[in-house]
Length: 351
Image (cartoon, rainbow, N blue to C red):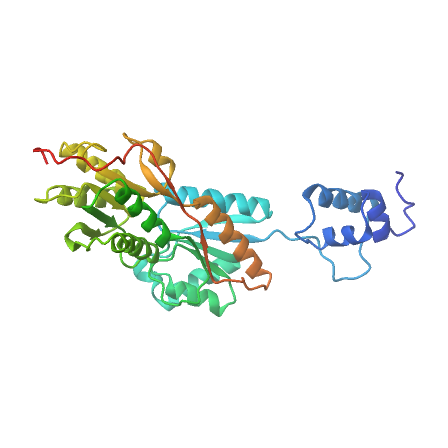
């Protein structure tokens, strides 16, 4: 189609015809509406450039790319990496910029001044919303964000004081119960638990699921078989050694995450306890790490990338001024059974 004469001002209708869309679609594309396909928006913007279209009202501006920040304490975790994969995918799909941030030092972030300064720095960078991934000591930062109207969505919150904070997680209680029921169905009755810190809502819910499964099976909780610590390989190694050295050790250990489970496998090897012949081990998260172990790890699958995607979609919706239908979103878990669990073993003299 030939361009219009330079003396005649292009109209929105001209842009729509040139792009092969309706006038309404052209208007939505120019106003940055998210319900317009990328190729359609590209055709409309190309038509604007070719025709030299200028709106007759000063209210229109070219669509702006929004920016969000993802903040977490450490990156050296398969859990964080998988959640970030979902955060990045959702940000890319929404044509939003993603900034990856470290929070202030733990001691400083709990102070109002440091939290306000950090949030102000994000706002000055053009950030419209923040996603916190298992972020410790977040309360002052959450309050500072609230004061300036900055949406803040937490994934698997830790140390959270305000129950109104918007959060995304998985069905942790159901996952803990399913994992424990799995080894109970295999005939195990001495079932240990090594979980994450009590300050973690996810860790508490998984522990409660474990206890609920025991209670449902008519098994009294043996507190000597229950340990809580950090989500780390060292936690599994240290507490795994302790549990396996008991006079009457567990024949199955359910753990709060895959890293703890890897530590338990290491403790079992160190003490010459065969997995799964003498000990069954269950992880939680079902990260790629679960298939790298020998034997491969039975683990509760939680949709880590899906949690990241949901958090981004939620924070962008809040940035548009729309509050989510639920402040606490939980995605379903399932059990992936591999080689680290087997039926209850006959007690041998070596145990």
